[in-house]
Image: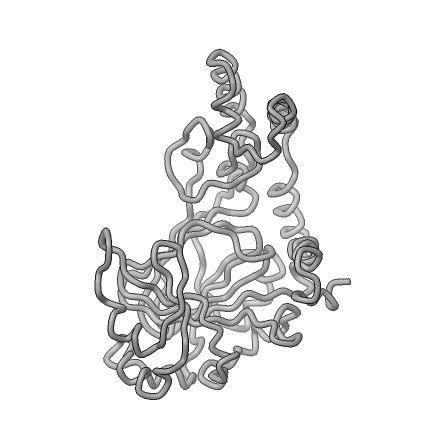
Amino acid sequence: MDEASLAQFRAATAPSRRVANLRHVRDCVIKRDADPYLRPAEVLALLEPERLGAIELYAAEDPEPQIRKSRTIPRIKTIEFRSYMDRNEPCLIEGIGRDWGLREYVTEGVPDLAKLAETYGRVQVPVQDAGVAKMMPLSQFARVWREKIAEGRRYYLKDWHFRLDGLGHLAPVPEIFADDWLSGARDMDYHFVYLGAAGTRTKLHCDVVNSFSWSANVCGSKRWRFLPAAETSLLRDVFGEDVASSFGPSSSEYPRRGKARPIEVVQQPGEAIFVPSGWYHDVENLNDCLSVNCNWANASNLLWCGPRLVDEANAAPGEVSTSHFL
């Protein structure tokens, strides 16, 4: 792990003294009301108005993290990638996936779902509607993917474990991402296909178990917005724990969110984007888009990923392999 990555980890995970004091206030309220499951907004609602105002002011004036000076994400060649991974820095890598068999299902720059459904129409795929996933045959998704449903939303095919369905040959893992300690044990697989019409999106999040991720556009363009890991505290709630589900103005629950200034970049077809550990991000498809995504981990993000993976393994014994990390 590079020193730059270690510095990001410390900044992202260490609470300030002011946050520690706020957590003490929260714990006192929880102890008084004997409800350990109170959410931050519920704790605030239980406070007297004068105390609430003092807490909001106190939280909002927590010293800002060191703000990253560079607000751009570079385009690089594959030979340059290792240094970005070691430093936990995002980048766009050119020329990824140009030889994939998945490109056979692109016609005039857009996903050809009719052709895809001819071959794989019976395969069950996960489809999102307002954050709720359901399974449907690929042939059914091919009929409805561009149709607007309630409130103008569209269905979004997300997190399709295409390799478990025997389709891994359509998008083999690029060599620069091959050092992967996360996938491979039993049916452990973190490789996915995403397919959505213009306007479909993924809300603000940090990747599973603080892993790295890469996302390669077979066709279509995506707009990504990132917040550096060292600036995560700006998105946290008044008690420095939960992270907001979107960028936006400050509020009593998220008193410093308005100071979070995301770094924006547009990813083009044939490019892969590297998402470092701990970097919160949201994504929007600017046009009809087909992409392959993967979460992975190795020695470069051991400190980020290892403890979270152990937590997952303890929560679901036998479901997660930690052999590379222990």
